[in-house]
View (tube, rainbow, N blue to C red):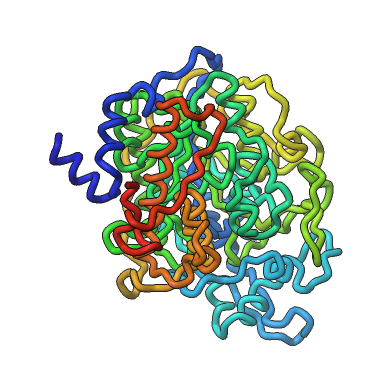
Length: 537
């Protein structure tokens, strides 16, 4: 037992005192005992896994070869290198996708060009003809990268899940923009006016109410199982002391809780966002190996499948946004409600009134008929679509939450509870294991000395907000000089310190449950200088 604890401590670098505290107070620390509210339907646990930056056609388009009912690729799709030139060469879709480096464009401006072919957004439906043009403007040859898609055998976990359970072929990102605005919609039905990754607002904490709050208020439970840093801490409410025990180390807790049958009602699994040699990134964000993402999906599914909670479980796998990769299905651009009346900043003043590009989404449960393909939703309005706000909207129904909708967007979004209502009993033929990816797509080992992506820099700054380093003069450029390895160590240590301080404050009763610990940098206790990992005193 002690040997295993030391090994896990070495991997995660969490303070030993924190572990001892958790062991001493398991009923509190693990939030294992669910509250008294009962759920009448068959689904008692919903697990959400949001991957990074890939379009439907790029990941699942060629599944049409296996199931013609899927609105996927036929092989006739193409994009011109110049939309305005009728004689422009065209880049055809291929099935040769592999390791992607560098990262294609997926800013608001880049996506507008990809969808409409220009800055004119009046076309309805959008032509979806600017992907190759926009990619080629970034780097010669990138047009072929964004017009490539994976063969089903290269993504065996997804292929098996799509054939065995349900695949959505009309699920769109909530915003035609980058990662964080879309991730915010997953649990709150709004980005609170963010149409890009605005560091100042993200780091202060997004103020909107979330599905986590509604679940907690209803007397149900939730848990976030993170691998290096939980991006859900961008929601300010989740930084409150009362939620400190909702965050669990994935390696130490996910399989253990599932095996014991004590997973909470609403589970979020967060990936590894930093590509280091011992534990490579598994979020699918370019330039990370999608084979690692397949291993994560396989592990999560098999863990749930072996759990005594399996017959009461729903697993949702989706992607935050399309990452600049081609998709042929026109993006919905009419009758999409603004969630909360907020408008994006100048010069675009975006009204949050059209969706993003289609993304891969899978639904897994023994209550789902084998080989289900989900197209358009049936309401609640004639213009409703499946998008990330469909998750809190459906969870509200499955868990019978009496609260109001979070925003106008989740009130409008299509829900999918009906897919779980076609059977009188759960299936008994669900596979116990998924196939492994056949090979790594890497051409070279992980570069731990690489510079950080914009997304990774934002995670480092979030970590600095948690541990108090935001007070340092170096804060505005924090992350820009870090390597991937340094950043990975830094964010893990920062999250550990923040959660340790929060649990101590909660136990001591010096703050109210709704307060947030404001840490200060402790330079004398830094093991690797002011920007290195913290020892937490």
